Length: 223
Image 1 (cartoon, rainbow, N blue to C red):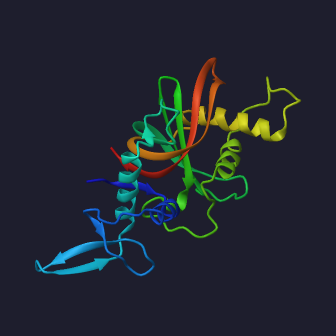
Image 2 (image 1 turned 90 degrees about the vertical axis):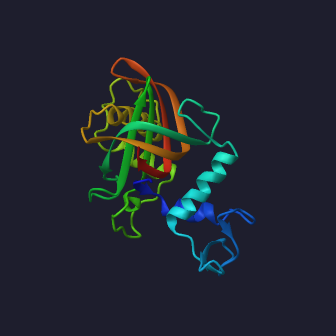
Image 3 (image 1 turned 45 degrees about the vertical axis):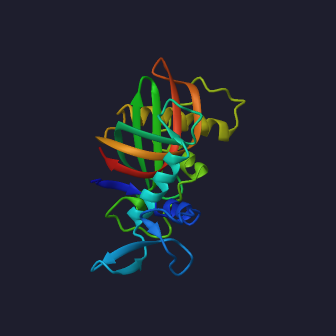
C-alpha cells in the first residue's frame, strides 16, 4: 500500500483523459464523458461502472508510462520522466508574486552530486485544501519561485547577464542549497514519478560542481 504525500490532480486529469485503455483488465466500459471507468462485480453477476478515483487514474498513468519505457532513474537524462526512491528535504516556500507562505512545495534530493528538485503547487499536498489562486507547476512559475527565496549574491555573476539568466543561475544554485539541507526542513524517504522540465550541468555551489534536474511530480509517496 502507498501513503501518498502529493498527487498533482491537474496533471492526473490531463494525462488520464488521453489514455485509451479499452480491453485492459481493470479499466473497461464507458462512463459519461467518454473516460474509461472501473468495473466492480457485485454478487458475482452485476457489473457496475463507477468513476475512477484520483489514485486509480494515477495508477493507470504510471502503468502506461512504465510500459512505454518513458521513465528512468535520475541519471538517465534521455527519459522524459524520473522514477526514483531517494531521501528528500521537503517543505513549502512562498512564490515571488505572493507573500503568503506555502504556495509552492519543494522536494529536493541528492545522489552523487546530482540534484533532483521537484516543485509544484502546495494545494496538491494530500489533506491540504487549496484554492484556484495557487500557482501552477509549469517551469516559469517554479523557476520564479525558486530564484527568489534566499537568493545567492551576485558575486561572480557577469553584469552582462540578463535578469532572466541571473534568475536561472539563482534557481539552480538554490536547488542545490535546498536539496543539501542548507535551508533546514524535514528529510524523508520518498518514491516519486516526475516529469523533467530543465537540467543543468556544472552548477557551482560551495566549491563543487553539481548536475541539477528540475522536475514537476505526478506523485510523491513515502517509501
